[in-house]
Image 1 (cartoon, rainbow, N blue to C red):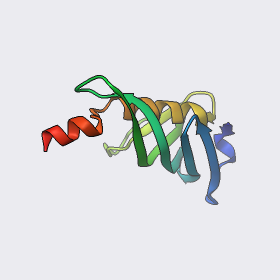
Image 2: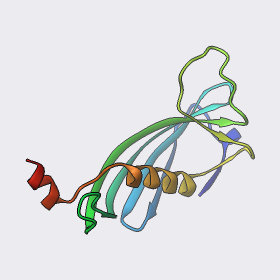
Image 3: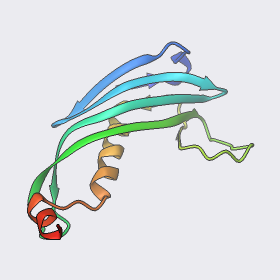
Length: 120
């Protein structure tokens, strides 16, 4: 699902995409200048290998996601710390954002239920 950034207004533009057992649902809203606010929730289940025993397990995902999308290269004049994704073609691909967020979740340290019980 590709969205043209210049069509995003102050009225939230809802979206929902899925990949396997994961759903990415939220909205885009004009914030200021070339910044578009994305607020969403990622829910579902991912297949992941345990970082301790290497056994595959289902990882329950329930994450809130919030960042800005900039139409062009982002220049931070006020030295404000913002989480910004740059769009160089004036569009945003929601599926690509979902896949990036999934990879970020997978890169975290996760252990299966058996290994968690051993730690306790």
